[in-house]
Structure formats: C-alpha cells, structure tokens
Image (cartoon, rainbow, N blue to C red; front, side, top):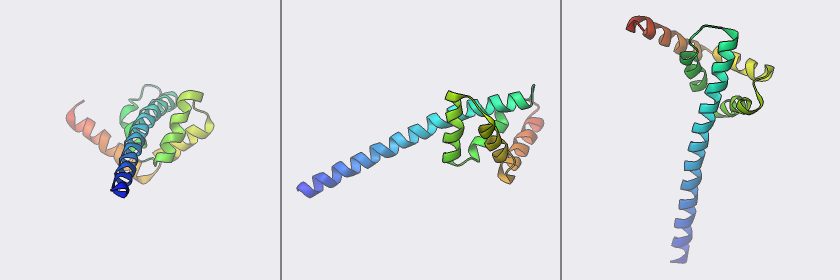
Length: 109
C-alpha cells in the first residue's frame, strides 16, 4: 500500500513538473516573439514582422527560444541577432515565411 502511495505521489510530481515545463516554454516563446519582432522591425523598418516571427519561433528549438527570450530582459545583442538570422535562413523557416506571404497575398490582406 505504501509503495502504491509513493508511486502515485511520484507520478503527481512528474505531472506537475511537466505542466510547469509547458507553461515555462509558453512564457519563453511569448518573450522570444517580442525580441524577434524588435530585431526584424529594426532590420527591416515598415515590414510586418509577425508572420516571420511566428516562423522563426516555430523553427527554433527550445534552447534557442530560451536564448532569445533572455534578450527580453537584457536587450538583443549581436549574438541574439545572429541566432535569429540563422534560424530565419533555415530551409523550414524560409518555406514557412513563403507560405505565409502567399497566404496573405491570396487572402487579399
């Protein structure tokens, strides 16, 4: 009986950690999006950064997302900008950006 209770407690703790991890990832992704929008807006004034930002964040691994999100606190420096440019130049990100641009043109937005 005691072993079952310990196992149940352990499973509950693991579940809580997983939920916290997912929430932490969500918060980091939101912070990173703000940084990416800033970098894109500075490099390409007047461009709607949102579609490209989503593609960059969606094609970054979670470690990269956290690195970019850190710049929300300290400000984006050359390392952050280079990371964003690197992610933006990946084939999957380029395809995503092209698809988003095409969708925008086709929808008339």
